[in-house]
Image (cartoon, rainbow, N blue to C red; front, side, top):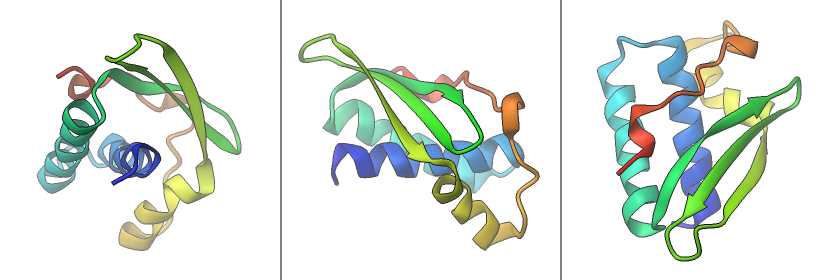
Length: 105
């Protein structure tokens, strides 16, 4: 799985967990993708750094060079899984929790 795919899937699950904090299956899946990012892609940290109307930004640090990088994903694409599974999103908006226990291996 590519780094960008793993980040995207992790982000989709993080989005779902933020809206459904009691969903244990979503939490387990979030942890699974966090493990892939930590072990397979050797990221030392990764988290949502900001959101706006159209984009969600993730900042991550790789163990190999220690450089911090920020990438963005289309917000509508990130929210799509939640809509497909549960109907209309309540919209995490600016209240989206950028803290994550899963981002440190």
